[in-house]
Length: 373
Image 1: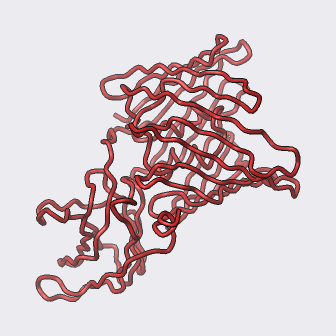
Image 2 (image 1 turned 90 degrees about the vertical axis):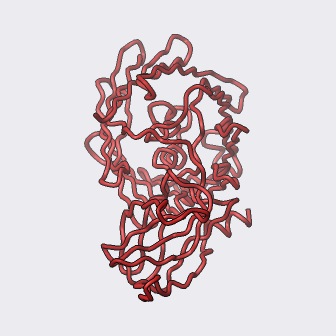
Image 3 (image 1 turned 60 degrees about the vertical axis):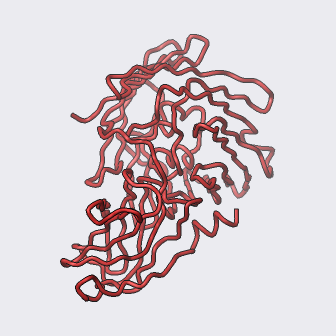
């Protein structure tokens, strides 16, 4: 835990940015890089912010493998800058120790070194629509979601509509320097908000407020290789606060195998009790779409009813993603009662086109996925 806190909190290294090969002084002073290491690398696809004075709209960040030459440089996508900071997305095409190169005004200067995590290749086409068909109380319902992205490829809007009475929420997403704000809606009116604090591309705190209730995830715990393994959260209602702990188990093959909630402190008799979800991975179905489907509300919202977990996965701030999608999961509650949900996948080439969801008792649903042209 001490190693983790050292990594994700205020630790940083200060590097001297002096002159380029032509003797030109570096235009940025006081460059400070987030701390990383081989044990705690920066997750691919996460947002990385470098502090310093003198960044401009023409500032570029490039990554150079320590053992490679300049012609192998990889340009990072800059997502924002101020005069005192620059934020870029950790590329998915590099891993290991990289020199961070500032290119600006015709010169280049090394800012320091960072470690980046290995990742499986994420397929390039984005999900733009999904349709969930399900049977609810003997009636067929259809729920449609439309997905919108910004110029850097990050999800900014999920707009939902339904033909039945069941409710699946939409959301609007705003990216700030060290925060992500989400507003949830029912297709018309906003009814709750969440705010994630993010450091080194990982969620470290999440607060959700809804109709007088407040959920706060105060602590996220990550393994040395970046997987989310635990969290502590509280629920406050009518002045009474209950505190819970959550645990996640990652298998040797890099797959999420167990998710469990444990009541830690009960002041009002308990809110929902202990439960455990055991997941069996389908090792023939990689979790490599542009959105992490472990965070899909249509697939897991009825099982893992927690914004702080589902949205962290969906937005890519929940640490290293599970390598494969589940073949089935079994939820067991505090009384020992359980039920199993099974998933069948259909693909069009490399891309998942349809997911069959069998919840038992004849309750079946299908989720269709549509991609950009």
